[in-house]
Length: 521
Image (cartoon, rainbow, N blue to C red; front, side, top):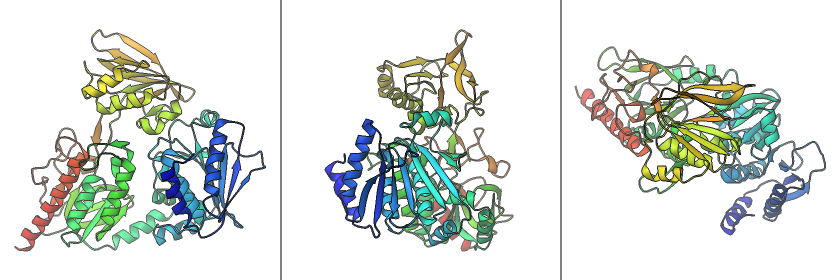
């Protein structure tokens, strides 16, 4: 089941088990059960602290298995075979149930242990989803730390009947006590915050007590991370506040153009960025949504950023690096059927549409890459491009045209997304050459038409372009002295990770230069 290299690595991890664990397996007669049995047999052989037995009860999903700490109520369950992106979730679950301590902060651990209530979580994932492990691993850890929390992770591709019955059309999809609770990537802090009703109030109180920063970075993507590192290396007080660390990169699957790194994936890069920032004296404030910029009344006074939880942060200089988000199509039905057939992440949600007919809206690189990936999973793909020609690189277009389950429509303007019984059933588009209207029956629509900057909160306070981007010069300076900006939220051309990193570094250096020049006066 496991190749020699992975088996050797896993063997080394199993030596870290501190307490005995029991694997309790539930099989059926299918091929996947045989695969699961082979995997569990290998895991059992790796440590004398691991035992394996077969589940007798019929009231469990098959194939599935539980990892239990012997003699306690602590455990987690996987329904399916956690390989692919979820293999790390399996390793962490084995270690944590086996008593290996978590690296999370003591404040978060204490907050989880103090949660009052009984919580039965179920998470549907796909093995190709890069966002799912964050949710699976967070809820697994919570179930280890608090015995009143239980968690089962379910491979949606393997349990299609459940996916249909519970209308799961996006992953990760989380159910709490039998009811739909959340969809999409969530960090441990976000999950705990939702369960702890007083968390916002407590966090706001802590933030309001912070001193004025020399540099405050708003945003935790590549630009924000680089800015924080470069500022902290200058020995000045640095803070970083972000909706979620990593930003849009966390939703990116393949990254092949980051110089010196031939290939990586978004979540891996986000983890590396966060670890790098934490090597410096940076005050990281995650899950903090900026709502209002109050520029300094006069030079020498601090700028203020008000947050959604009511707290305020002050700084002598700011670096705005709030990034961008997927651009919505803006047609009837899009919002109504979001996560009910309308999706933005083909890598995450594609496996849920196995054998079905889907559409991809957009003929740029992202759209064509999405269509290529989906064509290997779904029954049929219809790509609709607004322009007269696709805009993707030639090599991608050639690959797409070679696939026999893809239709390409150019000069097509999508006008409406239709649905029946609460889920997508088709779309309408207009041929821009002839004016004729057409209908396509399908079950999923993946929208890939670019990005929109996260700058609405800045309108009226700082100069923005007609596209909502922060206007900057070649030193990353904005229209307000002492406020700098970097990355996808700005007018800098070419929205690329490597460019955002460079721009963030430049913005921090410009902020430092500003501080030196103004403190000398």
